[in-house]
Length: 298
Image (cartoon, rainbow, N blue to C red; front, side):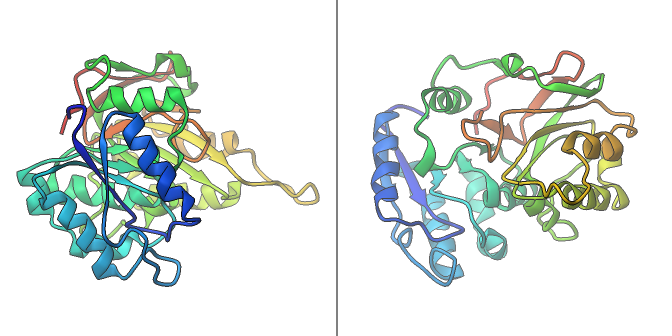
């Protein structure tokens, strides 16, 4: 990407409110040195979603197909992206790869892009919330616009659950959304991958159940390594016994024979790094580091 190019702002999942968030997103794009293009149905509403499936898919496909748009940036997460997966133009994205940026519910779109288009997409902040300077710098760096080349997250210093090193393509994102792609044509290829997982407002027992489902399906046994982000937004009930998230991760992933670490600044925890899904990364759980050694361009 180059400064001055156009970035499409679209809402493939939940409806965006209040209206001031559109102004904030467009201001952010301009402050980053690009020109915002608010897609026609971004302001739509259909139940909890930002327009009908056809409308939201039309915005996505138009942004992919337009020659004057260089990237697609999701305005928010929410719910509804799964409904779009059969409607997206993967052939057009494969023919002319463009960065697709977002997290949370966008995890479904990232999985489908990797599986059906075979191109890199970017697990990163949504447009309406990308106001932190460090978060913006991480996004620009990942897109190759600021100090391109090696992306080292050594400063994150994740916690080691099981030591070891792994090399493989990055996959994953939000745990709940990722599970909903299993058994569909859009689930990512877990074999030899470095799996990223995070979630919000999920109790430890629910995370335990979801990780157990991944184990029972054989997916966890096929990855090269696992990196956990944070699990925020859950308030424990002092009257009820519960696991800590660290215990869940240890019991469900500590015996898999692959490196595991936790605490990556990714997902629903405020300021986050941007990560290129589908691109090769190197993790060293003992050192608590994750490195993308080559430019992550589409």
